[in-house]
Image (cartoon, rainbow, N blue to C red):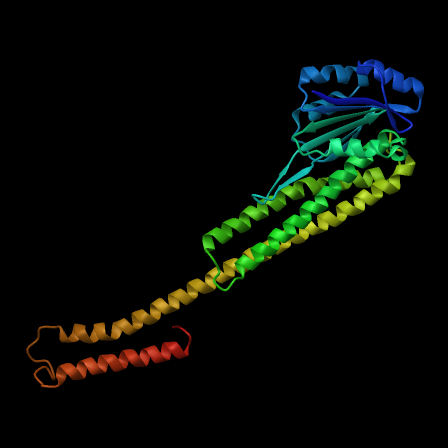
Length: 327
């Protein structure tokens, strides 16, 4: 559905025709105005009129309707098509999810298509309307403001993930060690969140770098430094994401090593107790054989001597294992 439709002239919102096809004609006639239409999860039927009026490319329309696209930038004859993936961080569950945001810009128009509820379009529109000097630069200003808002939120999400990683690191290297199975599951879950975040930030580098360069139609040359600034912020985010991924791999390796050490310790303790139990078992097994002619069998002190021998043997083994750290 159409969420908002407005004409902007000299950076200020103006009243225009209710029909957006007439509004587009009016914006083009004025020469210094443009039309901005915001759509939220439109159906194919709802998008048909927009496609015909603005001359949008069928491939771009297909991507905008189906969603599930990677961040990218496509140049067509009559428009520029950009795909961004805003990120949502749920602090209650420490999870990351992504929505999709498509932007068409062309001759005196901007069409934004939003999938999901996290795209910051309402805030971007309000902020631009409060700063007519930036909005006066036309559709390029809208594309820059949207990209800047999305990437700035990436920085916030990266900071939240860094805090979560520090908490997970503390849990893994705690003296008690916690539940090994739960800790491993937490690490793998966290790694999937970072991967989801990386799928949004990584592919966006090429489009932002391209917008910061020359030769992209429908983008003013004066906007190139601003897109370069967005690209710099995105590079910092990607470095943070790579750092998070490397640290998670290191934490997982350290956790698995800890589990191996604990298992070795457990096996050594079990082996030590088994060795100590083997001595009296062996002696008792020998004297439990029903032979008539066994040495010392009828001596008066045989029983206490044998018990004392077993106790001394077990005590000696215990001292040896304790000295070597097995117990």
